[in-house]
View 1 (cartoon, each protein chain N blue to C red):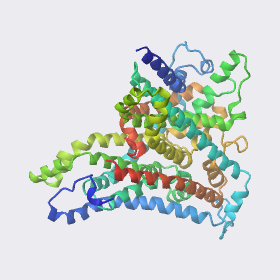
View 2: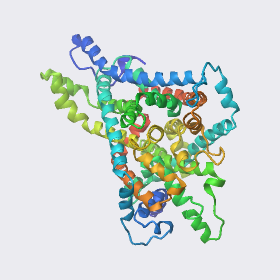
View 3: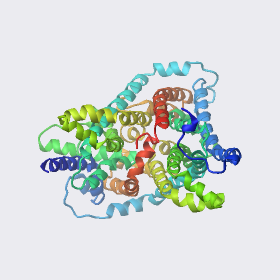
View 4: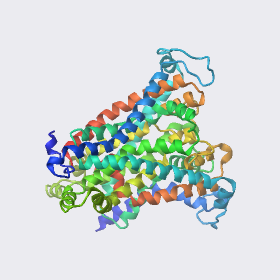
Length: 267
Length: 307
């Protein structure tokens, strides 16, 4: 098994190289602002930067905005997607496949192609720098993925089980509540997590449509790009807090992620 | 092709009552269809309209039908051709880097080794980092011309430092974006590779195929579809790359890192020139549609053959 050891070593070296920038961000977050510029690996860890981030900026506001926007858009998306996916999966018609593909094709529109009209519309509706404005955009952006993923999960539930329940006299609500809900819950929750990740990390619309009031974390972190704002330790602390929860979610949904990312084209 | 062969979702309910509930259930799709229809048509129609009128947010006197003036202006603007070239270079290089390294990584991780699951988590981690954070940790910690780790390492061995965003700005952006998208390519290719029959590989090795032959005659052909998916999906997202440029170079120095997305932002949102910005947006839409055409065609084939 000597060969396996060699491949294991190569595999680990590659993994560590890829992860290195994130690792460096993590340790810099625990350095002092003065110590952040030196490449020392051994230092006395401090929570100073985290305290500074909370004290000097409205970090909680940005974090709350991120949570509102990602969770809110996912819930809105579900309200539209679950009924649509349900009817497509259990009552397919000749049009269903074409309709699914059409829905996906709306994802192919590059955001930059509709930036200007959306900006002007949102401006006239008072949705600029408004959490609701981003929720609407993200819900629409994620809707095709949501429908598609939930559809594929529903399709895995054998129709025969539902049929058997119906023969046993279950009505439609009992069928939905006692059979479909528990059977599809794992699929729906992993869909939800993936949609939350997408909305949390989206930066094109958030930078263009929000500024101070409704800015999520992506926009707040972007404010560290100004030359006068070169506070590496604080940047790292703020970034770590913004990235860590979503990375854990991402790791948890690793297996379902491929389905969501490729619209089921690769399983 | 035939509808009867559709394996998904056996209709529930007695045959005679089938037609009526079906129509009712079809209504459940209506809200999604309507909002997506609006989302697809309204902004695009507006962009097309704006691209043919004179429209500046700063000067209300600028108005009227412009014909192809906006497109002509864009065409002649000194930043236009660099932006097109940068968009193509950016997408092209990121695709090459992520696919080549993605395939190699997938093959490497197809073997069992100690702690593979943990190593996999580290490899896919960059995909979950928000673009503004990715851009800034690379810009500061790795690529800073004085305090960056590369600069420090070069200094230690006596090499002159690289001014990443001054001398090779587009390459720097390409490196950052490739790092962000490599996990995506890896994850999809790795998943696809798992479905490759172990027997097939075994048969090849019994027949005396070396590792290189196995790679080029069995693994690469098997991954072809997945590579196609990676290329198309990445292309659509890479057309709108914006946050990384916004936080690192703001399109500069000069126009060195201005891509189509950044150009539209600069013209339409920063300079308030709606007409010309919209013309740029339409060009991006046309590029994306060419790619999308092939992607949807492939997904359609998959729907028919798969499941």
